[in-house]
Length: 364
Figure 1 (spheres, one colour):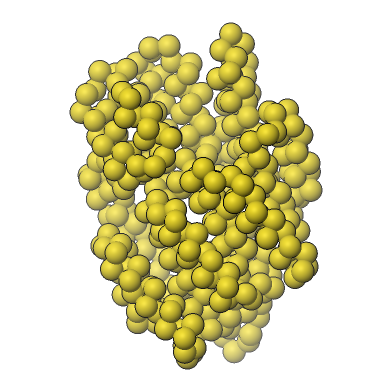
Figure 2 (tube, rainbow, N blue to C red):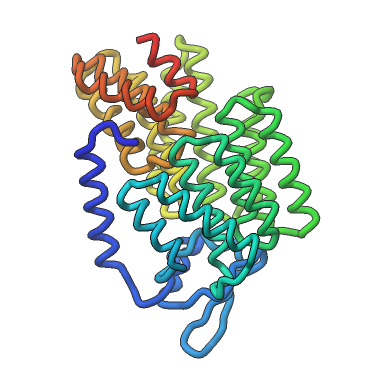
């Protein structure tokens, strides 16, 4: 997925060193406010709560406040799959995960109650990283149909809608989000998921004007006091509306790019921002710098660094990586770096062949 193998190697080395330094004797729960619950043992992850053992006590935290969990130990097949992912053997990893999930669906026997749904969610994540959008939809459907009380269920609906939207199937994406809305109502899920769903619907609605989007986003943010990650993501989408308006109105684009740049610059300093949000903010900053460069080499290099940050650090964020690759290609082109341009173009057309950005790259 990386154009420059040295970037990937360096990133993997950094990842391994971080894992060695931060590894613990138990599981770690990362909360949406950035706080960690360390050295515990996860018992179960449901729609309502994540229960865990801490010493001799069993405690719980609401699922809505959990951003992620790092597990210390996995079932054998899942452990082998995680090792294969680190070695970039993605086909092997998916086969191992699929075998484990399908086996548990057919004959549930895993003593770790959280593991089957976790493995099902990993197949969704991995297929998204590999830009297998049809695979994302089918994997999300498997999770939705077989793990109806899992903490990962809302994320599966969101991933399905995102994959359909990226595939140009906006109507189906909207229907997936409507299904999610019905789940939220029927299960009386957290306000967080109502807001996440509303935000996603704003993103996939092609009929809304920029002003209508900003008004709707402002309402979502106003209701999201308890969920800072939702606020930061809504603000990224707001910044994107200013970018879109600037692209349609080049004569008055200066102020519009400035408005967008202020938003994106604030987001990258936000500790609550997740990877999708940060990928969007860095891509947006790259856009602001690129369009303001007017051939200035230093500004183009600054824009390029923001785009490459997205490509290297947020490779699984398919809403943004193809665009970042395309504009990195344009930066290299304007900097007369033919090798860099060729690397970006090759990676984009190879890894995201069905994207509009690959189609644009093919013309250049």
